[in-house]
Length: 280
Image (cartoon, one colour):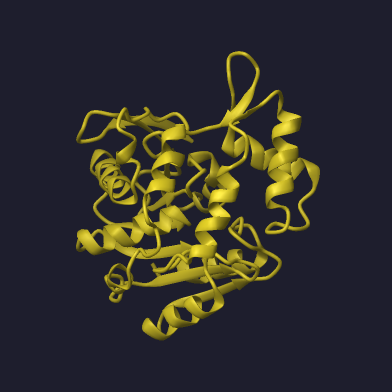
């Protein structure tokens, strides 16, 4: 795994991880995380699938090791899409598969809508063209976690308490690994979310009721796979079915015993990835 940085059009320095052989013949994969995630969210995925193709994961502006934006209003999925395109230009990648978890899927649909020819396939992880009010409330509850904790034990305990109904069956070590992916330790030893609090402010002020079906339809001519956690309210069953009706060739993957979001290492996901990547 190589680490790197690039600059956005407005001068921010953003961080990325680069796995696999850059000269691999297969189309590379760009991994885009959810609202509270970062490039660490895809550690296991990247290590598994970078054996014969390049896999890149970025930290959005304001997340992980990327620079924070002084203007919190720039924490939007359309700006994230511009940043992702800047990263691909920086790396000289002209064709890409995007796997987008939650917010990352919104970014992928925005890129499909605004940039022709770049996307060769898209994988949406528990996100669709509509976000219901109930789903937005669930995300707000997650973002209502206290801003910091005295140590990793308390941070992990709170994360588990908030998310265990959506990710049942994980043991203590797995929850600690999840905590390490979304929290970071301050110099004083306290543990906090690894992103700019301005992201939470922007999310609360903006209406994310719909990414829009127009953006989803922009992917009509490329392979698309959508993963849904069977317990998810972020991607309800009726929206999932409507997406399949709108795009009959979409690969639909239902992951039992998972809510928002599947971890991508479930047997159903791994089998679906193997078949999907064999096509692109």
